Amino acid sequence: MALLQFNSFSSFSVLSTSQQQAYLSPSSIKTHQQNNYLFSFSATNTKDGLFSLSTHPRKFLCKPPQGKYVREDYLVKKKTAQEIQELVRGERNVPIIIDFYATWCGPCILMAQEIELLAVEYESSAMIVKVDTDDEYEFARDMQVRGLPTLFFISPDPNKDAIRTEGLIPIQMMRDIIDNDM
Image (cartoon, rainbow, N blue to C red; front, side, top):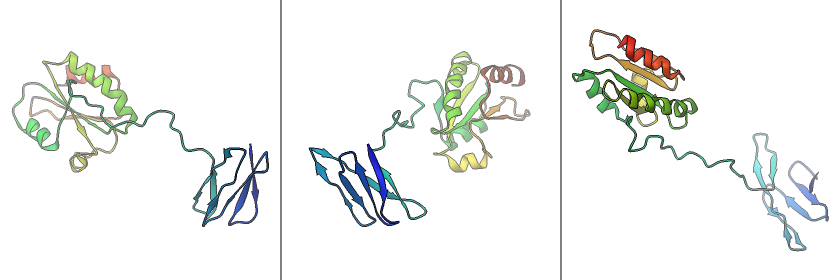
């Protein structure tokens, strides 16, 4: 167990139970080794100019995500802005569902499973695609995507307006939009 003893605002010492000392100052960090135990400390600046003490390296509870939530064998494919524009401008006989997502967005990750289920259910009667808002920032801005996930349901009938949803929505609501409003 280590106790902090403040000497001044610019330096302080750490006393262990066996009176081993580690002196920390803004310019140097000294550690004292005794009985084959090495106590290493790191100091970092804070906004107030004071130092915070960390005796252990930071440990993650889980591995950080690698940012790849769209695999090659998924039915929902990631598209670029130009590919999406070609799909929307071209002739189509099925509705197009565009999912604007981000790899760091928790609700997007949750809804990705439901969208994949929809892609299986509506494999021949709807086209579902994804757009990564980090990769296609300008396109997402032009489409006025403010919150994630954002879905656009575009009907094959050019006279119908597109339906836009924002946020995490249940799969049954997506089914109702595809079945009744497209």
